[in-house]
Length: 346
Image (cartoon, rainbow, N blue to C red; front, side, top):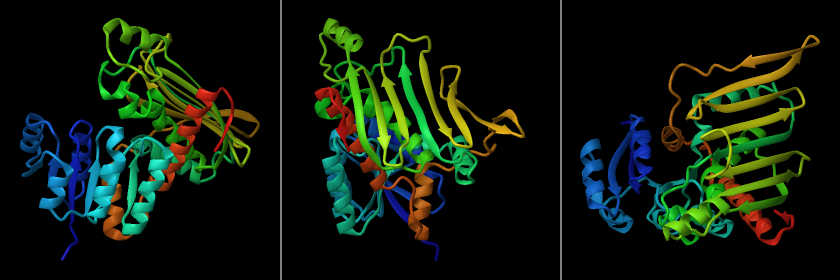
């Protein structure tokens, strides 16, 4: 008899993408969803034919014996809901960022180890067909050793609605750095082989968003732009930038550049949107040589598909909690450096 994986999804904002991702795998049974909004719960439940509908994680865990749970809620709840799911015997796929802080992340990892369950973080930008194709070139040794990189996500004006959880530090843990920058940081680290950081210098700014929030009479206590310089134990360095509001030309700019001893790479969004292009720059036979990377025509498997496949087949899963924790340690150091005005050891 073919093994089946029983799954639940908590949070139906971005959780809709998790539902679709889980449903890609033929051995996954999506049994239950959770959201405090009854209208959204009914709408999504009807759309995807999911009978188990609950207002809380606790109610879902009491009603079902699940194998895995997606946590897709505001950052403040990642820790407590992950711990509850692990205690109930579930593997957990947690949305990025892993938690509000590295301290919370360590607690989550320890709980996963104690429960003998897996913890994966949904760093979704590494799962595209193009990113996978770039990583295949990295693993084949095309680039040699990476020694410098720059990874950015800027928006000219792309702030979440004022008064919501994104702009409230007690719920989000930070602004665009922890929301957008976390994606570009993970992508760069993943392509670089996840080197160990040694120190970070960071700065944060809020002149555009804070003024707009004050004018609207709304709460806003996070940055609208963050920048950092990260050094690793192998001597490599990475510049990281993220913003919700910046006086730039593009409405949305996403790019990751990495320079290696044999070649360099660039992944960049096209037409200020969410379609990406990738190039490799090298030298062959005494001439500079550029290559345009065409990813496979077929759609890449989702993070949920890869996670399900790893669990069902006893293989290591991608984006493990340990990498999520390293990202949190870097983010913590950037915010601390911004606060203190000095470099921070990681």
